[in-house]
Length: 350
Image 1 (cartoon, rainbow, N blue to C red):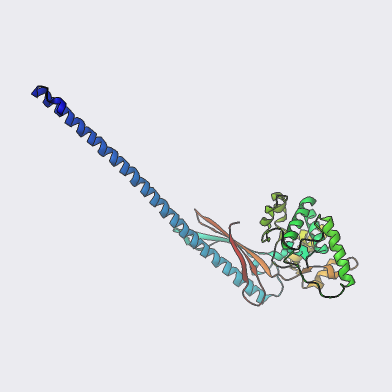
Image 2 (image 1 turned 180 degrees about the vertical axis):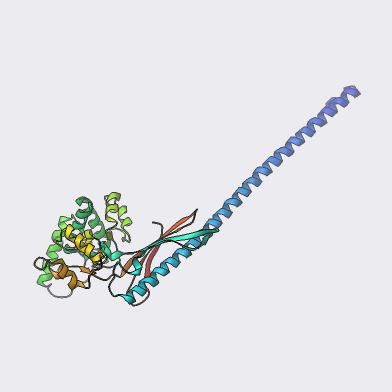
C-alpha cells in the first residue's frame, strides 16, 4: 500500500481495488486447494474404511465356511463310526464311500452354501511309511513300491529319489533298541536283505541315526526335495499315501495297480479281473479268502502278503461353494473301530 501514496487519488483507488481483488482471488484459490486436499483425504479414508469393512466381511465369511466344513468332517466321523458298528470289514459298498455332491448346508453372504465331500480310504493306497521298519529299509515293501511305480509310469530314478526322501525323514521314528544277545539267523538274513536293497537304492550304509529332512505328512511334502519332480508325484497321487504308522493294503477298496504291486507275481490283468469280481459284490471276507482267490499257493508266501480287508485311516476332502466363494478343507481320520474316529490333522486348501 505504501507504493500507492504518490499516485493521484483516483488512480490510487483503482490500484487498491485491483489489489483487493487479487487478494480475494488468492484466498479463493487457497480455499479451493484446502477443499481439494480435504476431499482427497476424505476419499482415502473412506476407501481405507471400505477395504477394512470388506476384509472383516471376508474374514467373517471364511470363519463361517470353516465351521460349515468342520460340520462336514463331523458328519464323516459319525458315518464311519456307524459303518464300523455295522460291518467289521471296510468295503466300497459302505455308506462312507458315497460322496456328497452339492448339498446345501447353510448360507454365506445371503447365498446358499453347497458342500461337495468324499471320504477316501487311505489304506486303498500304498503307504510310504511301510518303506522303513526298525530303522532299516523293508525289502518287501521297497519291492512293492518299485513295482507300483513301474505299473503307474513313475520313472525308476524318481522312485529311488522318493524312497531316499522317505527313509531319511523317518529313520529316527522307526529306530528301536536291539535286545541283548546275538540276533537270530532270520534277523541276520533280513538285515542283509535290507542292506542290499539300501545299496541298490543309493542309500548310505549304515542309515543315518537321526532324521536328515522334515517329517512327511502328505505326498506334497516330497516336493521339497529338488530331485523329485511334480509329474512323478501327480502320477503317484491316486495310488500312494503317507500315514503315521505302517499299514496293510485293503483288498476290498484298492485298485488293480496297487493290488498287483502288493502281491508278488500277480499280473495286472489278473488283478483287474479280481477287482471287477469284487466290485460286483464278491467281497473278500478275510486274508484266507484273499489267498484262496489269488490261486497262487505254490508261489506266494502268506507271511509276505501284506493285504487285509479292514481300514482304519481315512481322508475327508470337502469343498464349500457359493456363487462367489470356494473354501477347501482336508482331514485325516483314524478309526480305531471302538469309538468316534479321531481327527489326526486338519488343513485348508487342496
